[in-house]
Amino acid sequence: MKETNHSWYFVERPTGEPDADCFELREEAVPEPADGELLVRVEYLSVDPYMRGRMRDSESYAEPWDVGDVLKGGVVGEVVESTSEQYDDGDLVTGEGTWAEYSVLDADDVAPVDPTIADPPAYLGVLGMPGRTAYFGLLDVGDPTPSDTVVVSGAAGAVGSIVGQIATLSGCRVVGFAGSDEKTDWLTEDLGFDAAINYKETDDYEAALAEAAPDGVDVYYDNVGGPITDAVFTNLNLDARVAVCGQIAHYNDESVPTGPRKLPLLIATRAKVEGLLVADYATRFGEASERLATWVASGEIEHRESVVEGLENAPDAFLGLFSGDNIGKQVVHLTSSPR
Image (cartoon, rainbow, N blue to C red; front, top):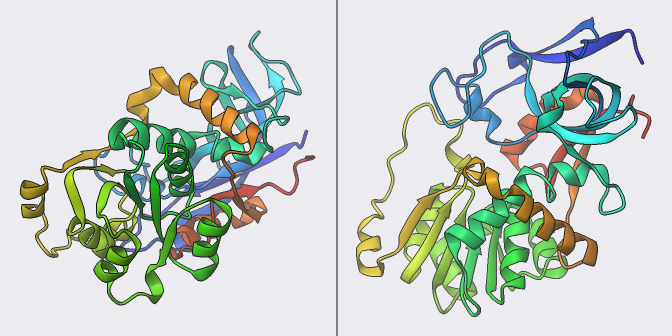
């Protein structure tokens, strides 16, 4: 074990889109675990769009970071010192840690990682929070039935790519919005989407969606917001269901944007629009993890991780989320780790 620990700290609140000035890498002592805690050598850490909200000085569903806080997120790593009977040194675990080489985690809040089911970074994606978000958001909020048309925005991301595959397994027609030809090809050629729309190369979202979903939209899984969501609302069917998971198109806005007023469309369609927080399903995480692991092990669900090498590049990996650099789940691999 190294004698020092490098950690990223949040040092400046952004105005608009974050930049490198928001982050500072510091060298400090390796932390010591208290009773019931684990010292984990981090091998992979997660960066996620919701973290942008934690940079604001305002209350939200995720507790905001104070300037001067160490940055936090999901990690996968090896236990190097355990003060809990639940885990031994050498065990591979996942949980909420810090952007650091070594992180202390509460043994009650971590889960074991089984590399025979999937490679470790998958436990930050399809077998972690994004996978559970996709599972509950589609099956509970979206409530799809066979022959439904399901539309997913941000479809090539960590959540959207899993939503679309679960919808296919549910017997639905699936249409995805993504931001490049590489991404749309991945959706249709590898993941089983019936159609995909490259929104960056499309001038008329409504017309493109009408062609891709000629029978209208029964379920919309919204990861993005903005004009894509405006277009989907004009194509909703009677009794459609909308799961609002993310609004990355607006995360860097400094004021609330005003656009076309779409709520009257919900009157005629009697559509249901429901926000989604995966934490509300905490008592059922075991159910989701078991089913997702079964699908992954059988090959019925594919997954992909975009890996940035080196803890020093973690801020770049996070900032790349807002320009759509990633395909699938964005993770950072700490190149100093042994695996």
